[in-house]
Length: 368
Ligand code: NAP
Ligand code: ZN
Image (tube, rainbow, N blue to C red):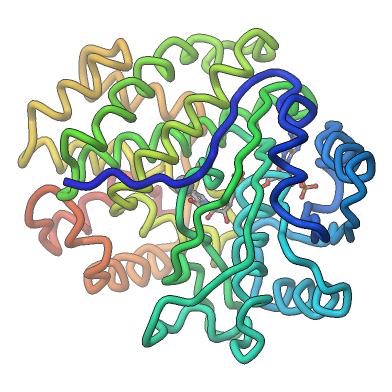
């Protein structure tokens, strides 16, 4: 067994300000990567740039990261940052901004690698500049994982890149959720739920990795009524949701994700479904299939969430994210691709058959 999450992680109110020294120690010239609006709107960009300015660390803001960051955006950011001679990269935002920061940190240390080649497996580990992560959604846990999920539109591929890029520092502050709409909080919380469930229903699951989802699922269970309610989530829960998301990230840092994530990428790529729901649609049926192999683990997950049956689990997810309709052709194409996706199939806790894959798609996506 091995435990390895080398990121220095702080989770508290006013986290960026409180840990200004840690942030300033990372480098002398920063590329700050954000999406177009949210980091400016929720105060996270201002918190970071105030610390950098006060500490005389120069910085350049690149605010063009789109949802599901593309290789074209990464290339553009790296090319601008090279002229500025940055020595670290800060990602502020949801998983998209943080993953983009990780990938650009890799490109900056490897000028011979084009962004379109990031998915190719290199002959040896590649270096990267240090990365700082400031998450503003409660889902991906990218601040505590080694992976970056990148989209290459030229070859219709959304996938993690095969490089280990743990952030050096993660500064996690629940208050940035105040600007998020309820559905964004719900969508990203469903992603965190999936990370923990997929981490337990996983061939790599062991005593180390289980510490995280077993505690995180209990926290998630304590938030579930607020997520299911029609009203907005109370501010007092923001920190718990963020903590759960970071813990869920630590869970998959050990095990990786399995089928629901593998299945989600096509749905996002071809139907533009946001990451959380795209994963969530497949979660209950995957859990049901895994009950054949590890029934005691499925029972444990339900118990930690405060649920009694798999039907309750299915109904809860459906209330949170609804259902999704695709054409038969799309569903068949997605299923055909998943049946040969050994990198995800081999992580399931038992031998998933082609019939199981078809069953998960049939249960998870409506054909219309
Ligand atoms: P996201 O794609 O980063 O952001 C979704 C939307 O939420 C964007 O429009 C963003 O606006 C907005 N937003 C972000 N924070 C907000 C806030 N506090 N208030 C209001 N709006 C806010 O969403 P995400 O679900 O966090 O990340 C999804 C990506 O992460 C996917 O590419 C997924 O594959 C990847 N992922 C990575 C890992 C990992 O371990 N690396 C794990 C799971 C998923 P702006 O564009 O204006 O910022
Ligand atoms: Zn995810």
